Length: 515
Image 1 (cartoon, helix red, strand yellow):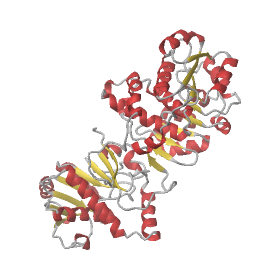
Image 2 (cartoon, one colour):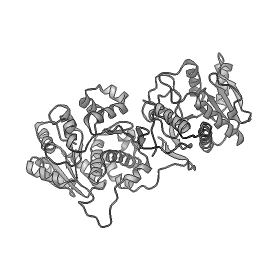
Image 3 (cartoon, one colour):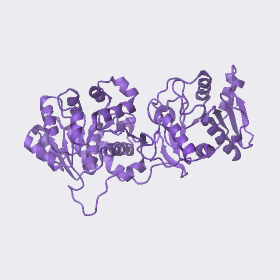
Image 4 (tube, one colour):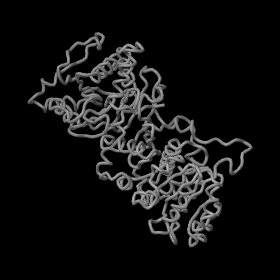
């Protein structure tokens, strides 16, 4: 389990480890600096290393990194930013070439020349505890790093990025690699801060095990997914491995139902029923022949299909006309307690007051909703811009208010539970920004619900598997929803803890946006 703590949660966990469990603070700093040094040595094996060293623990980590590199024979330089003393015990007697930022005040060209001589620069200026823009002294150093030219390796989080929200209120380091200690700080996963992080490598440094509930945020990693994917027994049958009812498509518009249905089948559903208006029957049976067609305008047939299925997904392409409203009401008014996914027009109808409110629906069944920011704005009454700026808190508050699991789409997409947990997707990309991708996601998530996964698990699994399928195609911006559907089997068959070319067992997570 890899946490995604805020700065405050990270600091509290540090105190718990040091003060209550007796983990020496010096041990954590030694492990952090040495692990970062090993990552740097592997990625940038030659040349001078220059670190800008702040006054806090990140500065201490930077000095440990420099001392290790010096012991291994690398030329290293420290530029102290702030009033940090020279010749600290952290250097263990190694003579590290050292300057102060004041040595370059008014002579920035000399600092630029010094930094440009390095093969790689290290950002140890600010840590996770800051909020608001950096003070001018630190902002001056950040500007120097960004204009210097050599690649930058940031420690824990790029200086100037808010560790809670990912906001960049002032100057912020543009890193090529960020080495995070113990967990990926939540703000480093959220835009605009994520664009400053570069390759994100999370390393283990000697913390105690992270118990459930220690951090509200958790990463959806390959290892997390591997443990939660449905497993089939050798003697199973189609109903036992998941029967899904998909209620989708308005009259003459079957595309969303086709995409969602195909995605559900590729995602492992054993028995698929598709309920749609009669006008869509021919095209649905021709396009998804594996599915059993249900006439959505027939209340009795629809009720029987709900009762015969293990989960229900409703909304893709349903429309907000009276026809779609009637179908949605018939689904929601059944007394069945099957898990329910609500997407797209189902959410729009609820937001318009034309269907039972989510609070009522979630009282009698497990519910997953999958809004994008615009749909979330209609559900909550919040401005879309405010939702985009505060997505973790908006998702958590909506999950608590509505009593259901909320999958808030975006980069990254987030899954929030009524208990306050937040799962952060790590597999999505801008390649998925195309019409119809939400229909595919609904089919996959609905399929995992039908296969027995709990709501938050189903939502997070659907996000990750869809994202990995998109990546496996290699199509980039040419990606279509059908491409994702066809790549789902390969994504589901992936083995192991994830991809990394770093040969270190202490690497917990490695995400390179360029890969």
